[in-house]
Length: 242
Image 1 (cartoon, rainbow, N blue to C red):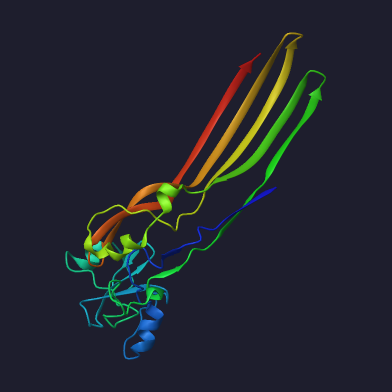
Image 2: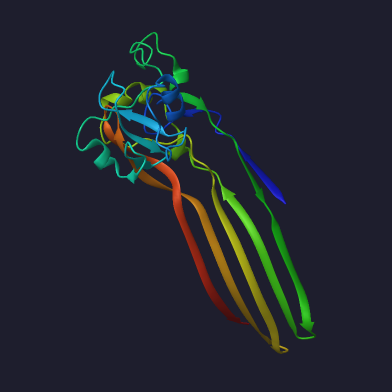
C-alpha cells in the first residue's frame, strides 16, 4: 500500500466563476428577512442579482449548474438573457473588492489549496491450477500529479484578470489524475517449448485533466482553464503464444 500526499502549497480562487467571493443564499436571506428563499434552493447556492446595488434575485448557481429565481435548474443563458452578469458579492465596498486597489483584501478571493491524499493499493497473486496451468490477477491504483505547466498561476495574471476576455489560464486547484487497473489471466503450458497466456484487463481513468470554459463570469464574460473533468475506460483481451 502506497500513499500519495499532494499539496500545491498555493492560494486558489474560492470560486472559479468570480474573482471575488459571491454571497451564498443562506447569508443573503439572513440579511433580507423580508424575502423568502425557495424551498429547493440550498444555503450554499451563489446569488445573482439584476444589477449592481440591487437585491432583486435573477438566479442562482451551485458549482456549474444554474437556477432560475424559483430554484428550477436552467442554463446560464436563460438566467442572464444576454445581459450583464452581476453577482451579489460578499464584500460590497468597491475599494475593498478591487484587486488593483491598495485597500484590496485577498481573503475575499483566495483560499489555501486543499491537500489531496490518495491511497494506492497494489494487490497481485497467482496460483497453480495444475502442474502445467496457472491463474493470476492484479489490482493496481496509480495517481499522477498535475504538471507545472497546468497549475502555475502568477499574481500578475490575477491582477490583470478583469482586463482580458476569452483568455486561457492555468488552474492551481487541479487534483491528481487517477488510474485504476484490473487484470486477470490464465497461463497454460502446451509443450516443453511453448505456452499460451490469456489476459483480460479493465482500466478506469478518473479526474483526467482537460481544458474547459467558464462562461458568465463577471466583467470578462468568459475564460478558459483546466479541470479534472474527463473519465475514460479501457477494456480488452490479449492472447500470447510463447
